[in-house]
Amino acid sequence: MAIAYVNGVGNREIVAATTIAAPAANHTTGNLLVVFVGFYSTSVTVSSIGDTAGNTYTKITSIKDSYSTIECWYAKNITGNANNVVTATFSASVTYRGITVDQYSGCDTSAPLDQYNTGTGNDTAPITGNITTTTANEVLVAGVYLLYTKTITAGTNYTLRTLTNPAPSKGASEDRIVSATGTYNATFSLSDSTPWVSIVASFKAVAVAGPAAVGSSMAAKMMAAGVL
Image (cartoon, rainbow, N blue to C red; front, side, top):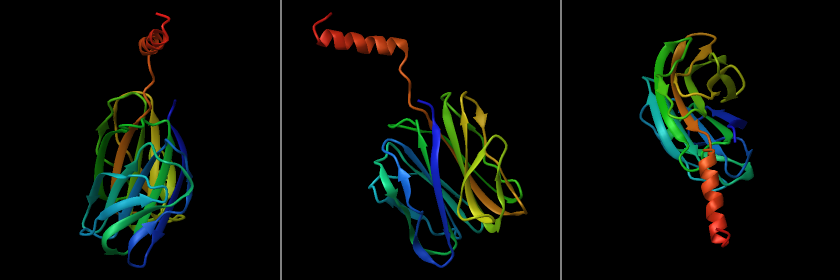
């Protein structure tokens, strides 16, 4: 089963609070959710992420500069919910919070995460460090969070997926589906310079059983039935 993008939702809030929730979305059982949370603080952290379906979220990494922080979390092999609301809870009240939630089908349901890296800068071209994938079929998902709102466009070979609010925005997510192992990074393009923080993470596809595995499985079933 090939990896495919399903949908994404985002939100941004200015007034200080200890949570931020994404709009409700239709999430399907067995899929993968990738969440980026950006906020204007270098001391506050995301304490937890949860949703109305009761899924478990795991933090991948975070990166901060002198102003802002971005964190990346994911939930694998999810329980579906037609109106699922994903909420991030912070360690303290914080202003200028943004969240994106993107859903993918076809990802490994037991251990989808492969590689990840981060980047910081102050210009019009956010870029992450390199990752080297270990399996051929993966989706690279990247997030960026800005100090000031700008128009954000996807980097080369990437597709812009979700904004924290309509452009100009303070944050966004993008993705790229690859079919060969290699060394990759993620880039964005901004309408004007601003400090930024970014993360890229790669997720593996569901493993496809080869002919030998299929044959072995068939033989086992036949033996159990007394045919062999």
